[in-house]
Length: 67
Image (cartoon, rainbow, N blue to C red):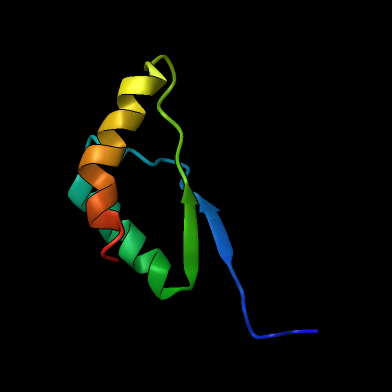
């Protein structure tokens, strides 16, 4: 049964939300306009994931939730 509810997930291949947050968020706005509602992010290779995730949650997530 189709209830008309669709969720689209996207893994941002070059997601560097901390290096250029404004550009990253501009990309996210474009994806949201296409119906993308979930984005999976991973820290760059050889970067400690705990401080990276902490900074993403503190600096990027509040702005991302406004999209």
